[in-house]
Amino acid sequence: MFKLSKLFYSFKHSSRSNIQHNLSDFKKKRRQELLYNIGLYGAAFGCAFGAVPFYRLWCEHFGLEGDYDKKDYSMKGKKLDVFRKYHIEFGAETDPEANWEFLPVQQNVTVHAGETALVFYRAYNRNDQAVVGFATYQIFPEDAGLYFAKIQCFCFNQQLLNPKEELQLPIYFYLEPEINEDPLLKKCEDIKIMYKFYKAKNQELAQLAENEYKTVKKNKMILQKLRDAKKSGELSDGELKKIKSTKFTDQEIEDFDEWAYDNPLEAAEAQKEQQESKN
Image 1 (tube, rainbow, N blue to C red):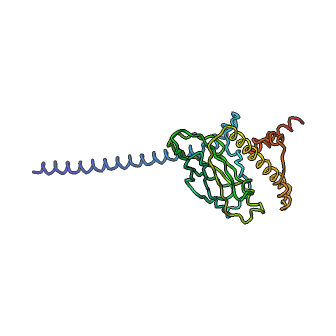
Image 2: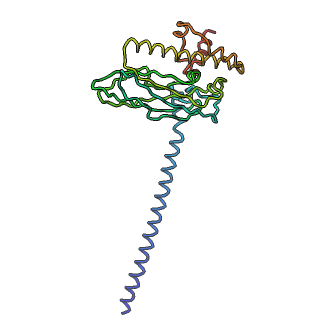
Image 3: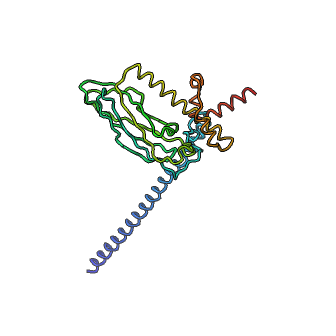
């Protein structure tokens, strides 16, 4: 009986010891796993945080153009009136000869000057044959047209629609920040943009596309003159009207450097390097 009691005591003591030992091992493993996970997440965060300066150093060392902070997307560094909003309404018309359904998917948007916006139009060919069409547009009030900048637009490009085919057409745009400073648009809150689709006729299309391209260039040239004039101080209403009514010759329009307008920082650096090389 004594031996049996001793054996039971030894077994009980051994089981308790094993449980405590296993529990201790389990806690130790859990602690190691926790430290491992913390270290892993910390390393991942450190790599992500250090990736940007490392990438810039790499690009600078090997002469690569990898720093997108140097890009000037027209609005950078300009004073924007973030409290003034413009309600832009989109309209649509279709030439009966085209026989298309043409409507804005989104009829209006509200934006600040310098804020990009993306809207779509829907075009549907009712005809039993394929039709090539193209769109023109008008802006009301007309003075707002100077500041309407298209990043992507379907206008003045041929659009082919097969019989009963439907197409979504994008307009990606923004209003130039200078619209806030135009006295003729001081009370302007609503802008209407009307697109009209025509059935394409090659000669007319070529002429319209050429005229549109010239208009876009002229607007950029006027805006450049406004920006250059503002560097010397505030513009009076008279000076502003005079610049906006500037006439350009075909040669001046042809010689205008659009790249320099769209990339002013890079253009200024290139001009500086050119002057230094001459000296």
